Length: 69
Image (cartoon, rainbow, N blue to C red; front, side, top):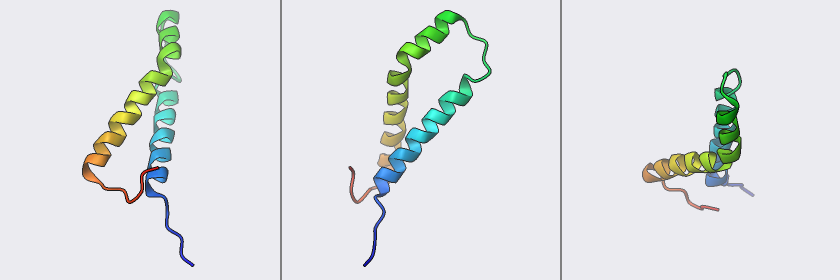
């Protein structure tokens, strides 16, 4: 019996983890106004989703995954 990794799933989770880690580090020690913080909190999901789509789209321009799930 042999197992094959779900490459795209692993890649996707790594990108998502990297985005979340980068997001948390980017704003950890920043002194931003309450207005900016509120904006980022309100739009965090959309911002992260666009980063995710851009990164995965660029990688998929150069690599072919056997199965995309």
